[in-house]
Image (cartoon, rainbow, N blue to C red; front, side, top):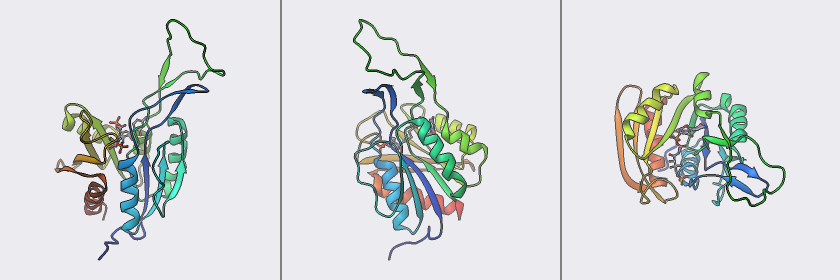
Length: 216
Ligand code: PMT
């Protein structure tokens, strides 16, 4: 029998990378495929939730049954999340938001030159901003290549989260752009739960089960 433990809950999920324009034909991005966030959206719908999915540009099919909000840049994702956050009971930020964006986007395609210097500025941290005025259960992800627990716990407290889902992104067997992942989940009570390598869809269910235990 299908679990409907998220019936009547509104879940906001972010997924995928962002694209930061350099000129009309070039952009800066990262290796996120959107798979982990889309798996969470799919699992949440299957468990009865009303799901809003804010997605950066990916090549995946939109999961059935979600309210879909495609965005390109970190700034667009910020605006969309700010619009939607107050309606959500649970927010899961899985997107790999660019940390830097070019200060200017050239109006025309840049001509070739011997050396190129592009100046970047920091983007706004969407997760930290949501954490400041928190009404919903808030879960973030931490993508790390070292000191997984230390960095994850630091983000958990600094960004005022209820849960952080940490994944090691140093290899190719899990993490970015794989069908598989392995995650460690840290919560404010100091506890940790570890899930070894599995499909992102199965891990999505495990993550939702951990959220249900705390958010009720
Ligand atoms: O998309 P896939 O190929 O399936 O890969 C999945 C994944 C590895 C991208 C995913 O599991 C993951 O770890 N997502 C978070 C990636 C990331 O940007 O991590 P971070 O440690 O740099 O950021 C920490 C948290 O802050 C994240 O919840 C992120 O969404 C959020 N953030 C970061 C920067 C920013 N400007 N705004 C944010 O909200």
